[in-house]
Amino acid sequence: MTHRIVIPVSRIFSSSMPIRYTIPVRTALRTSLITPSQRLYSARPQEKPTDPFQRPKVTIRTIRRMAKQKEPISMMTAQDYPSGLMVDRAGIDTCLVGDSLAMVTLGHDTTNPVTVNEMIHHCKAVARGCKAPFLIGDLPFGSYESNPEDAVKVALRFVKEGNVEAVKLEGGKEMAETVRRITTVGIPVLAHVGLTPQRQASLGGFRVQAKTAKQARALLEDALAVQEAGAFAVVLEAVPEEIASYVTQQLTIPTIGIGAGNGCSGQVLVQNDALGMFDRFVPKFTKQYANIGQIMVDGLKKYHEEVKSRAFPAKENTYPINEAELARFFEQQAAEKKDDEASVKVAKAVTA
Image (cartoon, rainbow, N blue to C red; front, side, top):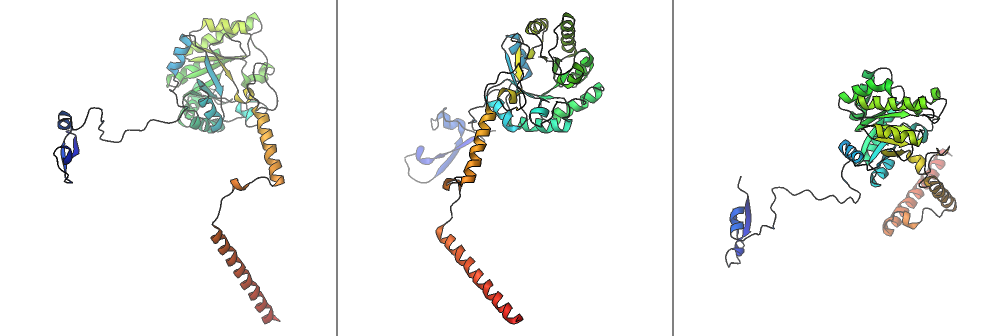
């Protein structure tokens, strides 16, 4: 296909006549009618994005590269569009839509009541705001334990409907076959060993794990089992730092610590804990990086006070109307009111 360009005749001949001549692009280039620096497109080029927060997409290959190069991996939870957007804009590597939202967002006492449909609902919302981080959805209690085939079906829903890129599930050796089956259908799995909150009742509450030599050995075996089954990484929760560091050294996949010390490949926190938005308790392993909860309360109090004092809304918070139109409106209303009053008088006279 020969591309052609329209050149005004005045650029070819000394003429002011409003005539235009179409010639092939190659001819125009040879005759210096256009320069190579003038780009010619058959369609308008896509404009460069102006989003100042846009950055390269984090993929599973990115995570593996970071682990190989000993670069710590950051992970943070999110539960809706705003929290997902903030994780993205903060530059965090990976985002987990954790079942912790059952407690910090939905107000339950444990993570167990949250359902598959609720988790997918929240995953969808987070995915709309969280574009660059690698996005993981947490399989809720009761959705994957019975058999691997059920787990595969739920994991597929999370990816297809929830728009996540991977799923997380709790458990070690006993969940190895489930991890294997999910990964064989092309869904990456983040495993979770140590303190597994979904099983907190059987553990006697949210208690530190691997505090004895026997428990530490079991933790290592669990981590190795999920690695062998195909997990791309494993969360180590609430275990002594020395044990977590040793387990990390024995694995070829990255570990993500939460209450497991600084020797893990990366760290994860619950966003509401880290930003001071959970009202009941702050876990020992959490560092509070902001007190957004108090800022929100102060802002809402100020709003309440200004509504009561009529300081809000002010003039700048309202919409103007043309004064002539406003006067016409009131005149019409007054006329209608006068007509209504006259009609009432007539009606009373007739019935008297």
